[in-house]
Each structure stands twice: as C-alpha cells, then as structure tokens.
Image 1 (cartoon, one colour):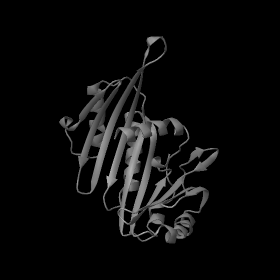
Image 2: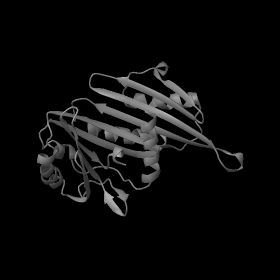
Image 3: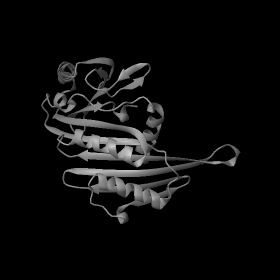
Image 4: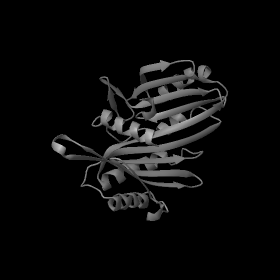
Length: 246
C-alpha cells in the first residue's frame, strides 16, 4: 500500500493541472466489444486536500463524510491510523460482495527552509467492482462530485479489466486496435511492447478528459499483459490513463 501511495503522490505532481473531466462517449461499450472470460472494473481517485490542516480527528471526519456519500456502511472505529515519521495515514477499508472500497487520508509533514514545517495532505479513493462494469461510470461521477464537495483537488480514473485464458496477447492485439480504438475514433499516440506486455496510449475526440505528456494529449490507455504463472492474458482499458504505467 505504501508503494502504491508513493506512486500516487508522484503522479499527482506530474499530472497536476492537465486533466479536464466529463466523458461524452460510453467507453464501457467499446471495452465490451471484445469477449472476455472474466471482467471487472474500478474507479480510482486521488488528489490534494487543500483546506486547513486536518488533525487525526479531522481526517476521520472527512473519511466518514466520503463514506456517507459513497453509501458505505462504516463506523469511525473502522478507520485505521498508521503513524510513521512525518507521515500519518488514516484508512477505511470495506469489503462487500460486489465491491471493495478504500478511502485514505494521508498527511505528509517535512521541515522546510528556516525550520518551517511544511504539510501536504492527500486523499485516495479506490472502488474495485468484482465481475462487473455496470456501475463504473456512475460512481466516477459520484467521486468527482465528492472531491468537489470535500475540497479535494484531484483526478478520477476508470479502469476496465478483462481476462482471457492462455497467451492471447499476440492474436488479440490487432483486435484491440481495430475494435476498441476504432469504436472510440481514437488515434494511437505511442505504443510499447515486449515479450509479455503491450501498452498503448491513445487520444479520442469522443472523450473530454486529456492528459498532456511530452506535449501530446492522451485520454485512453490500453495495457495487455500475459501472466505465465496463471496462463492468462489481462487487458486493461483506462481513461484517461493507467497510473501503474508510470
């Protein structure tokens, strides 16, 4: 989890200010044009809490407010506090039959110039939907509005995951380009591939979201990975990007 949060904080610094929101086209339909053996999806949001300094109790209050908005059944006693040097993490995790939800409030303090303490506060939200893509777009909008309501300046991402049995990376690579990208009227911006993985960054004029990377707009990210241990090929379609690719 700490590694994941470090990646999130780094990504916030890289991408801050480059993302606009609201999708105009149903990317879920494009994803489902390919047949998979298993599907799942996720909504991931992270950003900076820019209001006043939040004490431990304040961070719990913020988490409970978010839990209420997400209609989670949770108590304050469910929030776990982890204090390390210069860092406090307040985490609420709930596992249900259809969705696992994580809400984290991270407070990072460090000594700046002239012995002045600097404080940065972050919020991370992950909704992991099991065997379903039905509610992804709906809850993306809920998380966006929740960030606005609670004073979090950040970005919200969607991830659609499909699994096929065996090593189908090579045979379905053309299908991804020809079906998903064509459905979204998307153009490939860049593509990387090795023996086990293919990563495609693309831009679609049917999606308002965009991230500027190396002077180019990106709002679709397709990742294909073959797991030899499980003998499965994993497809992930993210908008506007899959953070783990960075």
